[in-house]
Image (cartoon, rainbow, N blue to C red; front, side, top):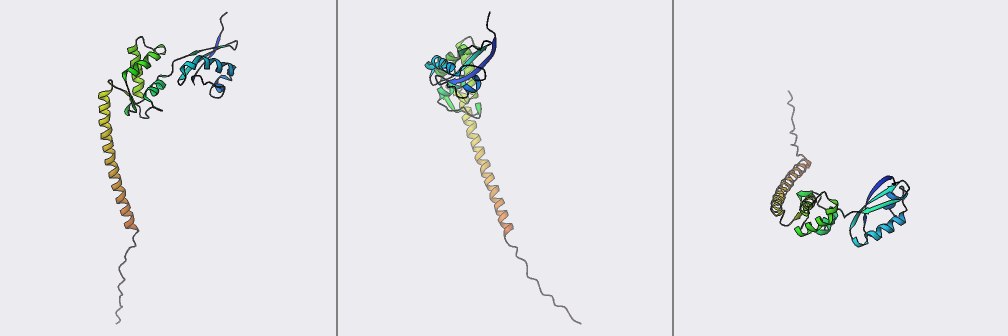
Length: 199
């Protein structure tokens, strides 16, 4: 009789570096999985991918046994690695954080093919290019015109920002001047002595 699947757990763990400490222990401990055994098996299975973050899908069965499947590293991780970035652009496609070559995109697409909803490398490359764009990573030869437009837009935005800052500084200076003027003691005209005329 086939074992019944109780639960599926997905984690992302650095290759060859799984330990029973959190997050692994926190997620797998309550599921009744032998943490030390899992970590040893995962580290052995992923040691050839050292330096990568490896998604793993763990299937837990009703008899408390389990299987796990290693997936390919996330596209975002591979793109950051190729672009030598620690983190993607906070403004997404509106800010170019790095530029990578089309060959690098092809390599990533070939690695990710198994996990992507794509039948050809070109389709996979389109998916990776979309992810790269959202992360602020441009591709040489693909986004060249876009890069030039963005550079022009950025220059124009910078100019506009400098203009606004100058106007703001001018306004602040005027406010300060007005404030200083209001703090100066008022000069009150001397009272003229009025002499009462006596009849």
